[in-house]
Image (cartoon, rainbow, N blue to C red):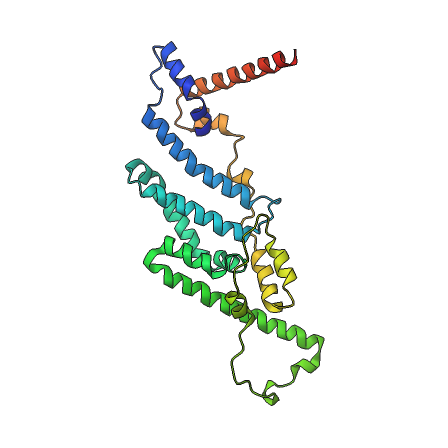
Length: 281
């Protein structure tokens, strides 16, 4: 509704000029507010479309972190303007986004850590922006959670190996003790240089290629990256099929505004049909 109204702002001005009884044309300030609201809502629509898209090559769990971080960054930028209208509009939304990130922080951040292009670097950078002085606390939560999860996968991997070859189950006490601690798969992975960022990077394909080097970690990465973050489709979240009825009966839009929008849509449709017919001739 907001986008349609914004695209037809000239129609409102013409209607006000042609009809002395029509005094509802939005002011320039109100149109600016419409643009601000639309830009924020568009972020949510785009995020819903991306996360519910089956054609995306980016795992949903990984995309979810990037979308949440992008939305929170956009809201923070708007909040820094200090406009009372913007503050009243985005205040509650900011709180909800931050609450969602905190409640799902380990799942969202784990997917980023399992991307060899980012690992803990992006987590540390984004958390510093989002949580400010509380960032070290949340970074520690992610680091501890990732390490605990890895060791669970490491144990399961060892059990699977012992089932395949019982000889591997020999008591490690009879083996020669190591003089120096050996780095785990996770430590080796995190210490390696980040993979360059390229278009259409296949993160799951990367783990398949590196499964021999990181057998337990690769299994963990696949499971984390394949977590489904939403079972709802974008259409169910942003259903536009009932908008005309809502505009007439359930919203605060006045009948004159609804009439102006409906008429403008009809005029544009006829004008486009006439132009197409003229081009055919």
